[in-house]
Amino acid sequence: MELRVVGVRFEEPDYAPVLILREVSGNRVLPIWIGASEAAAISMHQQGVVPERPLSHDLHLELITALGQTLERVEITSVDRGTFYSDLIIGKGVRVSARPSDAIAIALRADAQIFAASAVVDEVAINLDDEGEVDVEAFREFLDHVSPEDFKDE
Image (cartoon, rainbow, N blue to C red; front, top):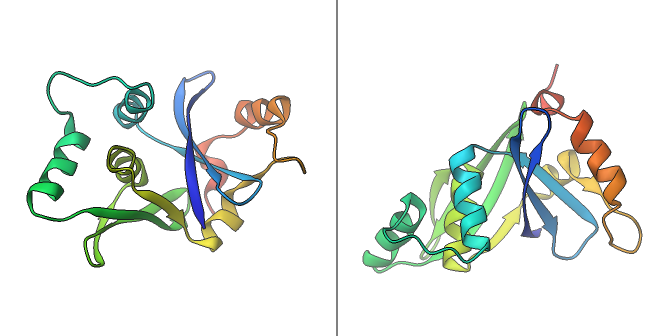
């Protein structure tokens, strides 16, 4: 199913960055804990900040383009004990494994679609209310009490 980036939020008390994705045609959000540099790259792009020199994700996209290819889409393929896996789909179906945070940072720069396997969304996503609005208080409560370990199998 197709997702869009809502943004990056920071979990208290450690200020851990959480990438929030939302279903395009549904009422669920998918939180993915990411690294600080990836969070910065995603946030900078969303805010329209253009660095003087290309950052790593800009460079990756420039390399794809210089090789005559396009980033068609990103697919979040699975989650295993809290670790998400994804692929960059380049050109005519070439798959390159990538961390979702890196893949999404590149996808945003390429205006490429982001998809997740239904099984991943079904396992990890959080439902929103019936009108498709985020229950802000419930979502904050979730972020206040959840940790990456909560997504790991025991």
